[in-house]
Each structure stands twice: as structure tokens, then as C-alpha cells.
Length: 145
Image (cartoon, rainbow, N blue to C red):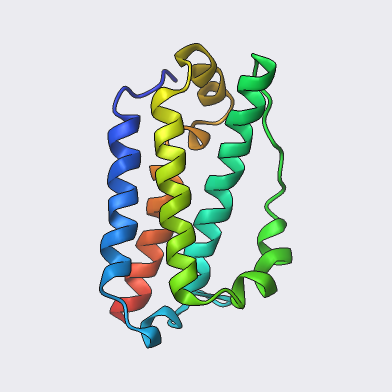
């Protein structure tokens, strides 16, 4: 599947969505359960972690001039949960926003040929909005309950 030319806009919109959701949350709302093990704050730390993983992939790919995906198994979510749970909510938001903005900037100026190779490997590494919006939908649903 070819790289959607709107990926930058989609990513920027998802970053703005993080900001919009976070801007209105109370300390109590940050502790709202999202599923069995997460809170709203943990969801934001999760997003920051995975955006940082993509940043590392971009760095390695640029360094080697070819696809160099930093592999991380999804079990890291479970292993990291106790660490993510102690990150203060305001810091969780800061991490999520800073990571998303940095990644958006890097993706926008990344060499297109390498970006297409990364996209072909896994489109969610380039169209970060897919992952971000999935969890932001869960956060908004939990907050509505």
C-alpha cells in the first residue's frame, strides 16, 4: 500500500488531539481507568514510549541508509506498566506531547525513499495517527463513562 500523502496532516491532527484532551483533564480524570490495567495517564506514557521507538527507528534507518527497525515486542507494555504507573500525570502529558511533536517533525523531513521503505514494513511507524487515535478513542470512551 503506498504512503498516504496526508500522513503528516494525520499525525499533526493526532498530536493536537492529545493536547486538546489533556488540556481539560483534572488530576482525578488522569486516574480514570482505561481498560483493566491502564489509566488515562498511563495511556499517554504508552503513546510517548511508542513514538520514541519510532524516533529510534528513524535514527537507525538514517544512520544505515536502509530500513533498520528498532524491534520491541509488545510484551514491553506489560513489563513497563509498573514504571508507567508512577509517572505523574502532568509529566505523562508532557512526554506524550513532546514525543509526538518531535516525531511529527522528524517524519516530515525524513528522506521519502527511506520513509516509504519504513511504511512498507509497517505503516503504523509512519502514520502515527493510527496508533495514537486508537488509544485516544479508548481514553475518551473511558472519560465519558
